[in-house]
Image (cartoon, rainbow, N blue to C red; front, top):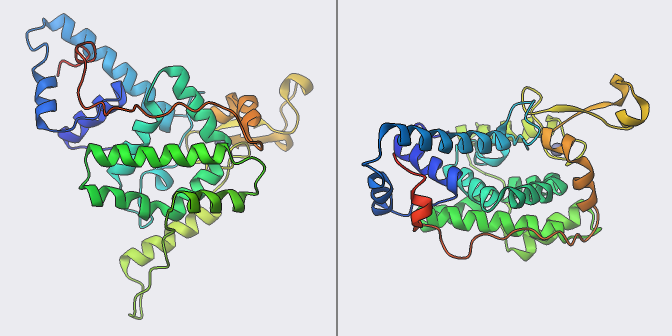
Length: 292
Ligand SMILES: [Zn+2]
């Protein structure tokens, strides 16, 4: 997570109310809003903002007990293929996932979870191309929107993919969206460069990483997992046996039926789209939330 106060400010406004701060003027407007409020009002609004932020971030990288957590593995979602932290990937993911109401967020999490293994394969293969959007546009809110748009399209296409094999589905998405898988990184020295070593290390780690049996996505066994009665439901057998348990993402464990309903068919699930107009201008109602 960004330690820079400016980045923290951007992160909070994005996560709390899905607002992308486009420039210094937009930041200034928010900072000046409600400057005359009394201390009690400021504390109450601040408390509300951080409740939303903490709840949403814990849905993304939450602890084991948070049943709403999809518990992403940051190495897959917010780091480049060579292990560099990517602010643009993080912000794009946050913007895509948390646009809209709680119900819409839930629907997107189900759609992602129904296709998560395939989604992570596409992302891992084409991450460099997806993040190149950011460098072409110079970073900032335009890149965030574009990366969110790519994430949205990948999930949408995978959800409509029907009974394609995993390989076909991944290939289709890459072709239809004209994404470019990262080619092998070749140099002509005898030893691997730091970037090459980092890329090789990440590939090796992911090859051995545990997989959630429900969504087929990577799972971190240190945090962000629950144990699912995998073969026999607890309600049916009334017992817990190590032979029957598998570690899963908390959200997958709690939404297993809804996720399975979307899997393996050309789903008609209506996935909420991103806001059409850039939310770089805030309504008065939204501005009331911010009193920094
Ligand atoms: Zn899962």
